[in-house]
Length: 201
Image (cartoon, rainbow, N blue to C red):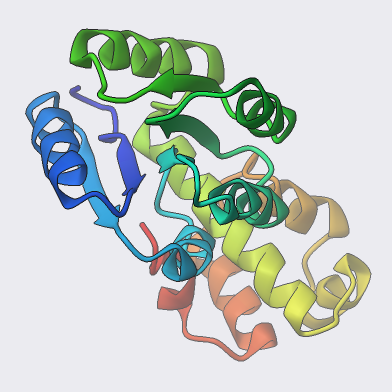
């Protein structure tokens, strides 16, 4: 994967045996993997912006897992989520797909099938991007979050920094790389360290 970032995958499953198997398999395939057994921690981890793919167990009777998918969507509408279940049902399938799950697969997982589903997700959603593009995306997300939290409009931030509204907008969208000078002006205006913009990279 030269010139590409490794795909960061979050596995959410209370079954320790399943998560251990998945972590070993995905790590062997060259992915960076983190596992979580506690659903309450998932949204906070996703807000950090490190993950491109989530493998989420939605097996009954833990119906809250489907609600968790809805919560994930509320903080990241574009994050690729693959739902897994040990007891497939039409109802759960419909609900997970309604919340834009990329796929819905049955446990125990066939690893060759999972590999193909992940590869399809990478192709269709463009998950592996070059590092510069990923850096721009992360900086843009962090900038928008801090500006919004400060209650500032693009125009107000532009006034504080002497930068154009257009440039700040392009940086927030990840479409333009910010120079060190520009980042320094933004950090000063938002009262954060410059390192704030790179904390999740």
